[in-house]
Image 1 (cartoon, rainbow, N blue to C red):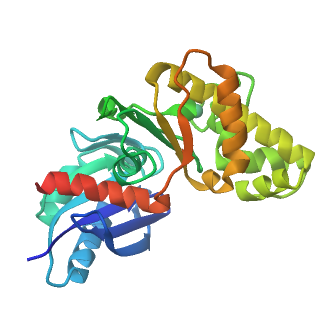
Image 2 (image 1 turned 135 degrees about the horizontal axis):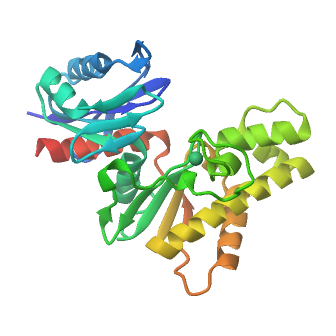
Length: 300
Ligand SMILES: [Zn+2]
C-alpha cells in the first residue's frame, strides 16, 4: 500500500496544504483562506484539511502530518508559544491536531521548516552550515550549524529584529530600527512611497525602479542592502554559514539584490568565512516540503 503524509503550512491569510510522498515529491496541493474564531486561527480547520487530503489520497494511506506555523513555535514540545499574527498563546497544537486526526503529527516553525526543505532538497544541500533567510512581510532565518538545526525552544533565528538603524522607524516588535524596518518587502515599499510620494505597495515595483535608475528607489534599496549586510555580517561572524539562501518575495529581484549584497558583505569581512549567497530554490513550496519531512520523521 502506498504511503503519503499531509503537510500543512499555516499563514495569517491563507493555508497551503499538500500530500507529500516519501521521496518528498508534492502529490497534491490546496490553498485555502485562513479561518478564524474570535480572532484566532481555527485549529479545527487544520484537522479538516488533513481529512480533505486523506480523501484525495485515493488508495494511499496518510501515515502522518506536519504542521508549519509562524510565531514562536517550540518544535520539541509541539507548542505554539506566541503567534502574534495567528492569535495563539501557549497552544499545544501538536497534541490537539494529533488527537483529532488520529495520526502522528509534527509541529514546526514556518521559516525553520522551509529551511529544513532548502537544506535537504533545495538551494543549500550538501553542507553542514547554512542559513535560509526569506524576506517578505517579515524577515527571519533558519540556521544549520554543524548539521544541527537551531531551534532554542522556538526563539532562534529572529534576524529581522537585529537593530541596524537605532534612529530608524519603530518595528512591529516595538523596538526602533530593526532590520525589518529597512529591508522587509513591506517596509521597502513603504519607505519608497514616503520618500518619492509615489503610491507604491509592492517591493517588486521598487526593484523595477532601481533597475530603471530612479534615485529615490536607489536610496531606499541601498539602505535595505546595507541593513541586510549589517545583520548578515553579525550572523556570519557568529555562525559561519557556507551557504546563505535568500527566499521570500524580495528574492525574486534576483541580482538586483544579490550582487550589491555580496559586494557589501565582502567589504565588511576580513577573516570570516564569506558564504555563497544564492536564491532559495523551492519558492513557497518550501514550507510544505519541510512540513512533509517533519511528518515522515513523526510517522517513522
Ligand atoms: Zn523588531
